[in-house]
Amino acid sequence: MSHGRFQSPSLSYPRAPRVSDRVAHRDASAHVDVLGRIGPAAPTSASDWHERGVECELEGDFPAAVRFYTRALIVGGPDAQTLFDLAYALTETGDAQRAAVRYREAVQLDPTRPDAWVNLGVLLADEQQLDSAIECFEYAIELDAADPAANYNLADLLDQYGNRADAERAWRAFLALAAELPRHSAYAANRLRRLTACV
Image (cartoon, rainbow, N blue to C red):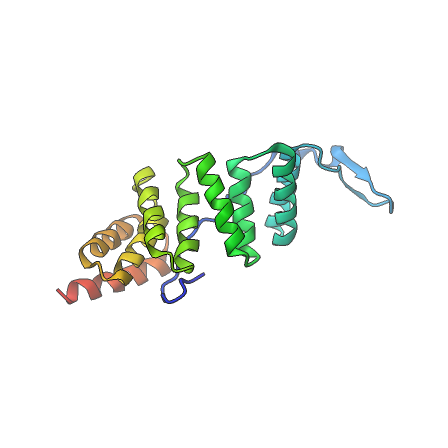
């Protein structure tokens, strides 16, 4: 995903796949459907619906994941992790507007999640709500100064805004954290060289 008028690759967080205890005994919970096919038992709880969403997401079926996560919220009520996962799946289906709403709900329920703040900031930047995006990235850094995605996206927006001193600091912070992100590190190093060469 790239920012509308920006050419840099943004950094956001996918949901982290989790191995469920239920996976180990899936066969024990199987049922036979009306066509005689054996499959997993119908979900009965919010966590069952959520787990089905995770399975669909891992298979790349984001529209189905959206349906399962939505059902988990209906059955179990608001849950920050399910809202985050729903927002991510919505983003993957191209529904950035609904995804932003769900990320906002996730950070309202759990404002201590830097990953949700970063992903919300990326969506806001894509919508050219740059001041709000910068606030999201800065808050994510307050929560976790070592968050590479927050530092990267903040540096990129500050750089695009022409805030040279703050952008330089943010690029340096990102480069100190991001050895495992070569594509983004190369971009950051080039931006930092450009900023320091223009001094």
